[in-house]
Length: 457
Image (cartoon, rainbow, N blue to C red):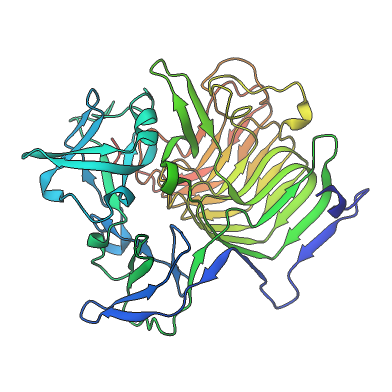
């Protein structure tokens, strides 16, 4: 908080001791593994009462049991819907996929929808002979079938038309390849099919337990924290449990739908981050590692100025690598309303995102972004390498509006961008949205190895 910062240009610094790598972790170890099925090399732990959506074995992310399995070298792999039944509020799949798995209400469909994706909890499945009709739980249903965008059903620009791609997750019946895990919440038993060479009696197994590890927050724009530097720290193992209790319907750039009308009045929320900063000036995060986080890595939420995210590595992040500035004024403001608050100190201003490696993000929600900024002004995004993700690398702006707003003089220069938009459609290497104001720059960026995904609708 404000009392923890420096003053008059003198910084309070938290930094790694020479030769050491301090770890700030939200993880909990899982011990007590015994063999469950020796032939399949499946192990189990009983009495697991904690809940989680990610599991790491010897510092490698395990795969939540899924159908279909990933492709070679963990390449994306999906089925396709056979039809979207809008009037019946159902999603139809091939009967050959199966149905009526144990703990059906815990099974999830991860559906790729144009530029976004959705995590949908199943409610029921009915074999109709030539297809299986799938109903989803009411929280998700009330949003998905009321939301005109992103477009649900046959793709808006595919030729020939393609039904949208999906995979299913979180059933014991899906546990069939090494590296997969499943938590049976009804029996409090965790199962894991070990990879070659893994001895689960000795393995280091970690599950994340907290959403935010480190928070820097002034109490208001008139009582900020300043002159704080965080250097050389490892931040890891954050959770995000909303998809397990309410589903997760990405709207765009990792902002999730809360409600919508058929006339496209939409409201969104913002996922948490492992590191969160608000109402702060001259705060520097430099040469840190942020990894194995379920939602966003680092988020300068609002009220930041003259602050910097420099030289960090962000990898194995579930939604957005880096977020900056508000995308809407709040969750009660319709998301087309341009953000331009009367309190200009609330706008993220003169912040810098430089020389970061942002790679292998959007691992939980494929419609997240590498670096996402809502309505910043005078932001500098430069000399970053952004790679390997399901959707857009760098996005600035929100709201779909030509109206003047908080943004002006934003510079996106000298970035290297490659292997992005690997799953979804309608993305960009660099994506700007709404009136950008004056003085903007997008130049000298090097972009390569980006092609349309076979899964994009």
